[in-house]
Image (cartoon, rainbow, N blue to C red; front, side, top):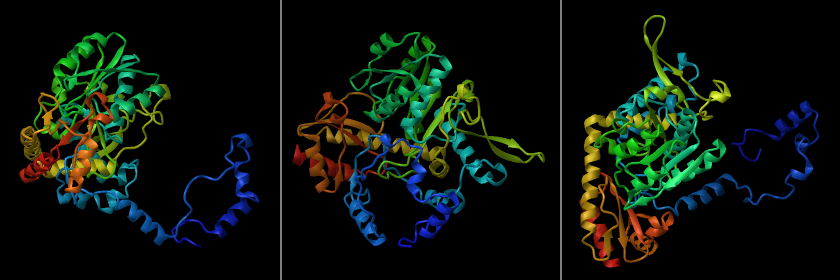
Length: 448
């Protein structure tokens, strides 16, 4: 055996072939018509031995700039926040990181309770009645919300603001094709949703209205107005929210949101090259039975002792297919646990203080950078911990120069919004110090 970590030897292969009465592995594919079978050679590298593979992957990893080697002002959906050491300590315990779906409650009480606590805290944070045991990430949670809206209202049109994260809008557009939904984007105006355009677009055919606040530009949306417009046409009001901001802002549930989704990455989940993340999904009590994924419920056993079970699984494996709202069959239990431990470690006061730090430091950064010649704020809107600035030089050139000074710059808005070519989206979390913000301003002064 050439590679000790492969689960099968040649002897195993020959024995299985003999039992099956086959002379070649290719015979397993005889049922596939020859004209649709790929006869060529896949364009992938040759196999490597373990030391060579380790060196190759290490070389690829070293091309990245980790956050412990640079000061980051990059956000746009993934944020560097404080993670108490207890988070990694708990999620590294083998009973959690090796746990599978807790179908057997009698041996999964710890896992089920952890998920239940996550659900409870998300419900409190969002101001909603019920939350599920998590989704894959924020964008897929938003797409699932659109599916629920269509199922509940029996309508097929989804209106979504163009200020919603571009990746969320892309995921929704892709999933909408399979669900037979029509997605219409509502334009933005001055960095927030164009409310006149939304009022003109919404109709009796609209299943749901989706708004993000703080939005992709970091600006706060008028959720009360958005909810009122949606409910006037009996459409569901869907809000995508940054969970950190809810430490200060009034929760979407108090604005009449029917579904609140978002990404739990800011809560104890590190920025790790694109994932995995953890989406949250919270609803009103009326929509409880339409929630995709799983809900962990609290009950008592025959002796009256507190216990937890999986309940209200609204996917096609558990109920009639035509009644299902989703086919999602998993959740991000380990990352949900990280978020639950993070919220527990900080507590209500800690989350509020953290949100205040984000708001104050971002406010200072915007004011400081506005003093730099060649840098000006792109919008004049209330914001949380992200804001956009217009630069006198191309964003790509500026970011390259910043990186040479040990600073990871902001997101180039021109990639998704051509009208904002030359604008940079900057994120300032509680981890950024006054010295680091001033350092960014000094480097920009020398560049632009």
